[in-house]
Image (tube, rainbow, N blue to C red):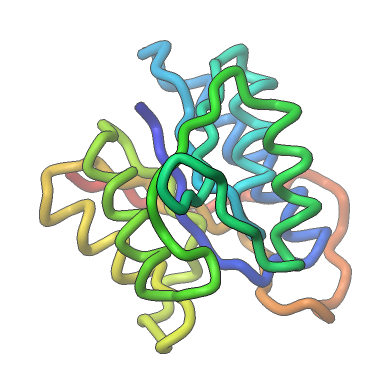
Length: 176
């Protein structure tokens, strides 16, 4: 499996750059492993689109309360619709989508099932809301290969400035 984690606040231009870079990475990766993503805002939709565009299967994980899907926060509803349309398989996982610590534990479970983690991450430390730095450290500590994806010109935040549409260069970090 190939999992993704990443920042939640990706403006449209950055999201498009990230999607292009994720597709390039997935097309280079010879293993036909499916993509694994937890439903939510941020990197999940660009990753899901890239997974499908690269000809891979997509497995989406929904929060659950027992055997029933849990309600999603409003910000996750639209991304969830698109992810459900793109996924070949949907799995339930017990976690509370409104609770940061619960989402982190869910991401840890996904990473533990993966051979590769694509981290949409600007390199910033954990800030108490965003846990991407934690997930990168968690994956590395558990022997999961990590590739950081943060295209040159990418920014965080809902009101970030526009970026030219040309394909940007990307800083690449790969570690095991």
